[in-house]
Image (cartoon, rainbow, N blue to C red; front, top):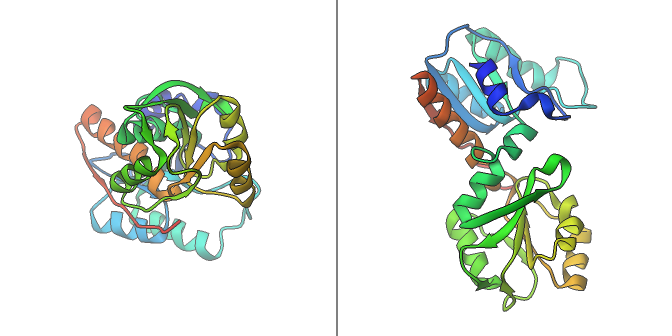
Amino acid sequence: MEAYTSQLMDAARFHDYCPNGVQVEGRPEVFRLVSGVTASLDLLKAAIRAGADAILVHHGYFWKNEDARIAGVKRARIELLLRHNVSLLAYHLPLDAHSVLGNNAQLGQKLGFVVEGGFGEQSIACYGVPAEVLPLCELGVRVEQALGRTPLIIGDGDRAIRRIAWCSGAAQGYFEEAIRLGVDAFLTGEISEQCVHLARETGVAFIAAGHHATERYGVQALGAHLAQEFGISHQFVDIDSPV
């Protein structure tokens, strides 16, 4: 399953901050797959209770520049996986970028955005148009209804949103590039202090809709695809995060 998934995600072409694919090896056969956003201890416990043979996540382990020692929180997580012989598969940038199953493709579909192109690091972010022209305040309501989270919005609520750029997670660093694309608004998960001033001074709205909230959909789509492809069961477990 890993070889198929890594090829599907075109994982080899990405210069990522963590290894993509199997991060912890468990039993060789997978009959039940559980997916989630982040491989936290709560997700691992929920997946094991559900009888998972493998866990599929967007945020896994072994990040660049992190402490390499297997101690503390990392030890507890990895020990649990090894004790129950459960595999952990993680896809980070490849899951952001996939044109159909990726976080940004799925987020755009969820919010009714039509993709026209990509931008940002390895073109993982998207720009395009909403299904209909609508004021920023109404777009904010639709985002809240779709994601179940009240977004933080910096901008003129009456501004008509004709073009929009978006990138799930912590992509506030792409805001200036989005502005140069000539969009009316940029939507991502998190916001930094300087984004407030850029939004005010350029007139381009900034929508912070939650890191976790914007990254729930790619891993669900990939898990469902793998279940169909391999004839296995799949369950998405949403461990809520306020961030």
